[in-house]
Image (cartoon, rainbow, N blue to C red; front, side, top):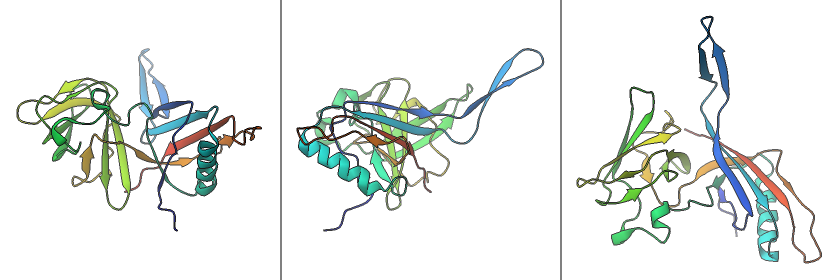
Length: 215
């Protein structure tokens, strides 16, 4: 049997940090104002802490880390607290798959990115912290998160402010989905598994990864 890559990360992490990492610099002006600039596109950064695992979970995490070969391979990473939108953890109503029929992005006067989704069930309610995944090509992924709540109107359209903006490399033909949102990541050198205890399972460890955007 051949493993299908990119792999999806296993379950069972004790806790997780899943946030946007930016490389920002202050840009002070002579008149006293403080500006800010970002170097490169902001990327999702993940750190998972492994606590007490079952033997099966331990085996899965050890195999996963081994298969990644450090930073050589990609994997699918996600926010363990938001595998689905907060209001629809048990699934969407009326058989909705979670996929929008179309999407677009605009930038408002305050330089915020506004994402518009179409083809959604009227009345569907998304809240701050819900994610939208964009997928295209063989396995390419991008991920954005709502920073305001919004409800789908009677025409099936929803508009909300997001962070980060949809990357420029995402093609207009990409599919936008609310279900099982994830992005591509690679492990960093800060990933370390703890020792195996008397139960035959690792009892600690840190999984550290950074997003890898691919056109």
